Amino acid sequence: MLTRLHQPGIVPLRPLQLSDIFSGSLQTMRRNPAATIGMALIVLAILLVPSLLSSLALNSAANLASDDTMLISGLINLLLGTIASVALTGMIIFVVSEAVLGDRVDLQSTWQKVKGRIPALIGSVLIIAALFTAMLAAFGLLLTLVIVAAAAVDAAWAAVLVGVLGLLGVTVLMLWAGSRVSLAPAPVVLEKAGPWRGITRAWELTRGRQAWRVVGITLLAGIITGLFATMVQVPIITALTIGLQGTLGPVSALHPAFLITDHLVQLAVQAFTIPFTAGVSALLYLDQRIRREGLDVTLTHAAQARAAARQR
Image (cartoon, rainbow, N blue to C red; front, side):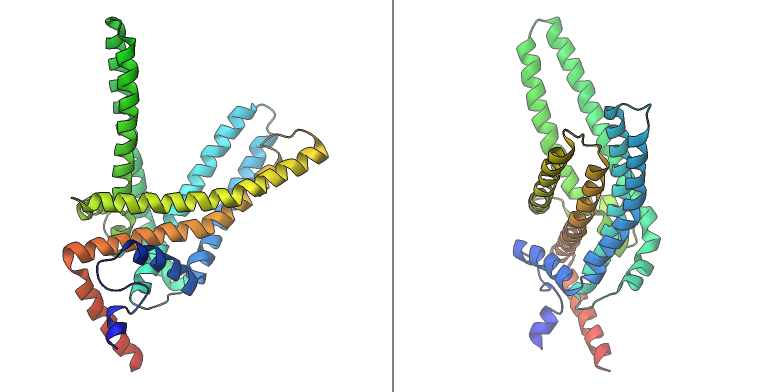
């Protein structure tokens, strides 16, 4: 009984270790595949159709160059994929929060709880994108001024050095800041925070030495999902390329078979990667609240109340 109170669900109600976070995310997917993988397949498939149709339509447009077609198609896919990812992340975060207390939720109840938060989730993504765009624009302007100043004094080596160091610095800064604000969907869904409050809440929870821990775990989760996606996509695309070239001769990446296969592979891959990374973000958020705000006490009481209700 004591064990069930301290771990009623997928993770123990205490400060979490790396293994707790990764295994908890995977356990949520294993214990409730319908509300994680199944929900991801449904949401992604709904947006797959317009994305694929737009790519095929652009491919058949005679007045567009291949580079323009790939660019426009990529932007449309990015937009629709972002919407799907944002909505899914919010829903998976709710599923994980319930799994922490030992409860399973179905698709309908998850949608009812999260659908009202989707505008705020999209708003937080837009704000983050605007902030990072401004950061890159400021870096580009500063780098341009340095290059112009170096050219004026005939010190090209200084411009190159500053450019390389600046690029490394801004890359590290963006990874560090991006990982910290990646927790913003959790307070938006679980605390019903607005877009900006969700971002500031994520920033507050990851201040101090904990920031680098959150950054490290977030980047590691991204590397793992990236490797998984590569291991699935590369063999399939390579086999398709060899097969088409052996049958039809040289073909471009805009061939309908490539477009259809690429969309289907992305559907299959993201149905697993998005629930995993969203689960990691949700558990990182709960871990930070346990460490800073003693949320484990509240969670324990909630788990006890739910256990008592189930026994009635």
